[in-house]
Length: 128
Image (cartoon, rainbow, N blue to C red; front, side, top):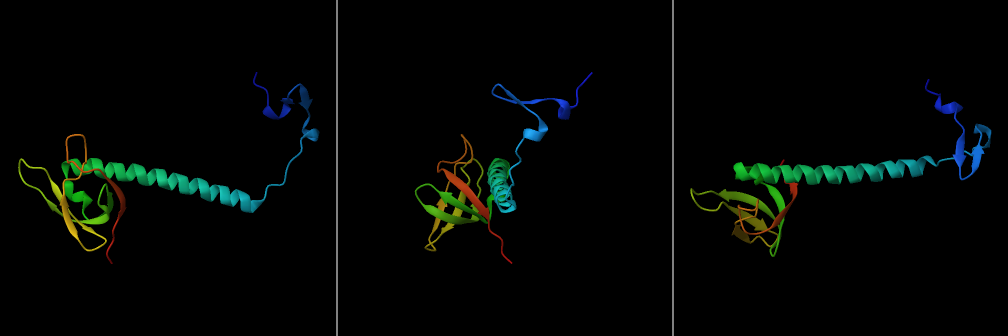
């Protein structure tokens, strides 16, 4: 027969405490709210990383999914993918517009076999 958790004695070290001996600290609602916000932002960052990795994986079969993504490209900085150059039997290249309005055509490393230049997806650009 399973015992009710409330009827079990609580122990700490070698001392058994009854419910009447347990001290309940007042928890500040602001600190709880702050902690929950921190946890949500960590989860959001993890979801973003997971979603960005999924987009990179999708780009192996369909390189156009990277269109309008803001990227951080190793050795070049932060830019936005504005076009895709795809040719049969050649490496897919991306036109990337960087902050100084210069445009570079680069073979981004999307997998072990695809591309040469490492990059990180930052965010999808939306145009209203």
